[in-house]
Length: 248
Length: 387
Image (cartoon, rainbow over all chains, first blue to last red; front, side, top):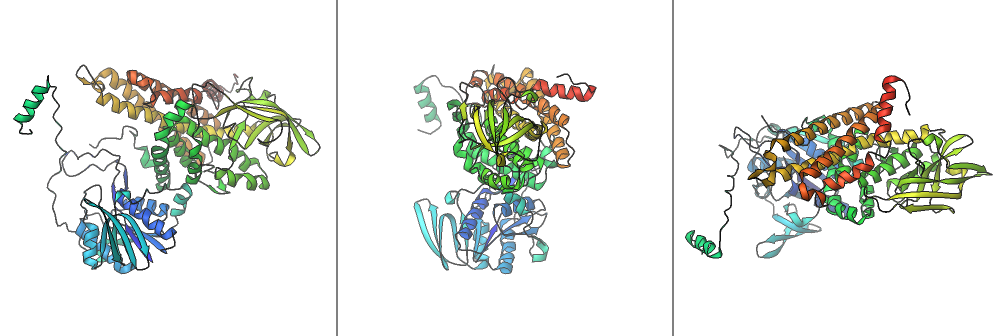
């Protein structure tokens, strides 16, 4: 069984995101980039499934510019067997990403496509669901626990009311939530070994997918600065203020 | 104009290969997640976090630049980056890895017999055997040619007598690489610490490197088999070549310590309001911060260049001396400045500068004092040995 893990290159979660001065987007020049943390959790889970003897191969893939290969190499160093890079310099929105992933699914025939529930840059939370629809296979999103038994995956999901457990027939799309696992540290010898693992480049156009954005972003701006607080003299003044604002 | 990374003003990260960058990120993550949450407490309690040894070994940090025997075979720049990230956590962590890798595994790898390599290196890479390095003696460290510890032949064995001082990992270690005078000049021995007549005692009441074990070693007629003598080196060049490896790593380490101090101080001075404006809005503060960034940048460039020279097989010991002198002095000065800028907060372990400041007092002393390194550079310039 193969598991396909799509990963996205995003601004590292520790970086304080800044809007470019011309408002055309978010600053990425000289900014640390990483694998989207939810995707890293998905990859960790795929690797654990393989290590438990329930999968033969874990393939990482990414869609984007040449720079994505840094994150693919990190995925290979974590333990993925090989990498696919869908090369494009255009912006790729969730629907285009799902269409491109569908082409990779048709090429590789995986039993599981394991994604992060969302990317921390645009927070769309759409690609996995769209892929399942296009592929016409079941989906189990926001997984906090995954058990595999033959052709069935039992997936625990964190929902507002508590924990929900789904059984889905494979092949299926799974997406990871934060508490699914804690990704491993990349071991230094494995970083050296990752250099020798195969990384295949495919142009997005070769897949017959048009990246043409469905949505156009017209402007970026940072959130407004918080207005400073004000010290009040007494409890009575506080109560009055709250009443004035209609909060009491 | 995009803004710059305050801790990497010259985008030196761009000069790294993908592998070097990944190595740095992996060690950085380990330090952030595993070391930083506990290290101030370890420093306070005066204990080395032995619980981290299995993970340090599992990451591949022990003997990482050696080839074979379960080691990763990384280049010099990668080893430097490991030291930088570890010391961003604490000099004690970096010291542990420096000693195990450069001072213990390196001489076995470079000067040991095949049997010694196979016996010790895989277990040392796995963190199952910890080593310590005995060169410095109680009467002084800067003059190893006059060491008093000696070994004499007795049949098939050697009998070792003497004492060593300021030995990192001494009471943690299963083996000690001990340098001793013999009739044939200075030689290195692998001394198993459970040998009769071997004793290690911790040095107490240290105000520096508190999250690290520092010991004294005593040898009272310790019998060492000939098979434990390092066969491929005689003379001071043995221990000095080990120190050259370790000192190279030490040029990188303090960059991490200085970055940690500057990073925290930038945040503190931005958030702290005094006279109705952030501390960072004062010229007096900005001049000091700017000077720190200048000195960190210079140190980064020196170490990266030194690493590239090392990887090309062209690193000269004098270059290591200048880098160790410059970079440790840089970090010590920055840690003291940051301690001061943090005001009262600066004296607590809740903030990093005082811990780094205290640690760096050791780093500027060990592996060649600042003065000795200055004199090495002086000798290079003049051709005259002044020490």
